[in-house]
Image (tube, rainbow over the protein chains, first blue to last red):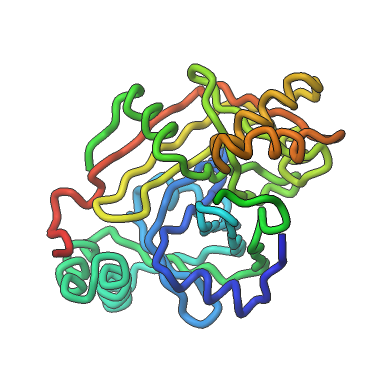
Length: 147
Length: 147
């Protein structure tokens, strides 16, 4: 298992396109995980959610969140980005990010379509500025590998 | 987006083989996510960890955990299994599960090898009996898909 540099962590988060698994904490103290579409803006991770979603409610109560992205095949790798989430309902920004993130996950040909689908009233942009960023690659690298 | 039945959730958790993303809560209230290798025994999800790992420490403080497994390509799907974790250091059980889970992720030819690697002193088996199990498939199914 080999530690990634911060730059390797950011490269891993950007490509190939994978979903982020977002953990938030419920009011009763239980963790919740859901997959999210995201993109990076510099060091900040950006995703969207509905104003009334459970994750938005959790974030209003406890803004400290964690996002994990991993490579699920041998020799395995993963990155965790943890930080404080800040939510915004600015309509221009919602439309911009819905288009940008939609294009990232569904292809540029559908960016505008998903920009429209995902920028209705009640959508929020969530910025997570990392307080912690770490990653490991070659998790099983020093052990025998499947042939 | 279409809700999965409990049976569909269990099938999804079993095949194809994907990693689980485990969320635990730290003493200071922040969530932590890490990928885990797991298998199901009936309805119970089983994974392993080191006695001194951060996730084991978190579980001793707050045993309520959540595990998410997702399909990262269009039309996207995911399952969340949440429940209370119970840890055991029974040596026979540790060896059994290290072999079984090692075979699941690295192939049967390497099951015994990984059974040995992952059953050293200090390894724990964690059973999570679900209090909540739900899943969604065809998340983007009713919208335009990439061609």
